[in-house]
Length: 233
Image (tube, rainbow, N blue to C red; front, side, top):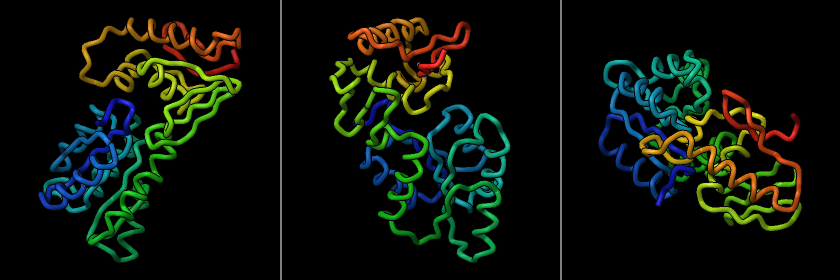
């Protein structure tokens, strides 16, 4: 069963058969899924849900996939979301056009599902490494996402599921300052009815677990902004 640490993939596809194949295989890999059937909906969902990756069909009703990609990359809030474009247009000029518009990868239909899944995982290893079973390290902390195990200086750190998801999120982007609202969305899920102060409680528990041996505090509190994994003050 997918949980809020699993990467969210937005599928933008209006052909029912293609949508079913993509949904089945991505869900089988443990990804959370979002859907859009046309370009306008894709832009709205991408802005509201902030997916970790977008699989975008070129041929869509209304706004074309290439234009959706251009608009996504032009907006600050969606520009960093990787886009894999699917298309029946296999000519070199079309591939170049798609990549120049901002697509991060390009797959021509008909495609191998195994190849698509491999490219999705390769892309997510750069953007959501914990979500695809990678091992993360920062200073003397090591998080093995495949074994769901955390150590500090070689000693096991025992964390509850929420604290584990918090740490995984912080370790994916060391030094980045995460607001409480962003951590709520990433760790608890956008629809969770949780007060932002809950984040402070779980950050406190995470700190206590990581610092149990008297090690330096790795979590920096940024007043009025949020938290970051940052040893340097």
